[in-house]
Image (cartoon, rainbow, N blue to C red; front, side, top):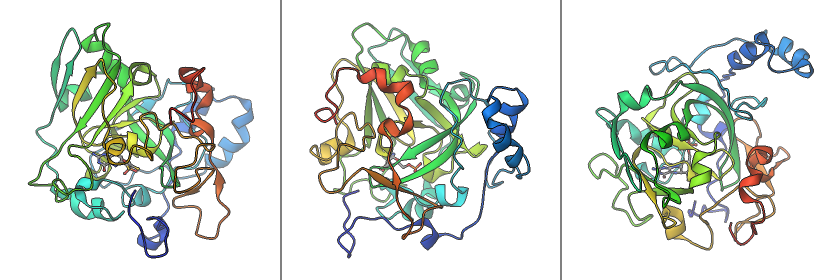
Length: 331
Ligand code: MTE
């Protein structure tokens, strides 16, 4: 995010420059919704049009199917980003700073065995083997709009369950006000750990009510398969109303704290990346506007940019969390 390119901009290469334009559209969720009569009459013509579309999964990794999401707002009508784009245009600084580096280097990440420690101010601290974490709650498919602080966006069908299911298991103490997310930092497999770009391990944090919000997802898969390493295997956070850097990848520790935890990008540049980092078109990054965005895989360099939505379009679901807060101050 801090990397300048020659033309004075920041690293905004569009996906079609680095990948073939293969098409991948996921329709199953909508077809299921329509079959269940849950999506309402207004959707009927759209759905019958889309019913003709092919439902496939990429077939690259092990399947991880999720049932229909029961969380309001967890499914957008927008077209999912092609898998090839979502899995090759990434930020995962442990594996390099170029958007193509994670896909190039993350095969070195060893995801089995994997344990997540849930600790801190909780009644029942627990160490979860990945296999147990996978069984903790029913998997849902959540098609979320995602917005990176750099000005691009994607639509991704994640598979996982609300983080709140895990939080409830460990019974946080009354003194727990925040949740810190710590990710793997393994010098042997991650070539950029030890570099001075960030303070490793990469960490993130949420306020307790944000962590408990049903949209906050603990994700194990995308596009009906387990996560590719470059997208944060084997387990990552997804908070769709915040900028993408909140979505810590390859989690190893989830810690409940009384004080607001430090976060990787806030430590690197506090005036640019705040703790909250809610998507907000009215609060520019100090070096660029956040009013518009480019959808990866759809909007070419010369396409008119899309307007960015407050809370990335999830205001109805999450606006209440920030009632009365000055969002310019708590950026
Ligand atoms: N998690 C770790 N561990 N390391 C990182 O560098 N980058 C973040 C976030 N999570 C990052 C991370 C940033 S800047 C973004 S935009 C998203 O991951 C990108 O996630 P995606 O690859 O699924 O699009």
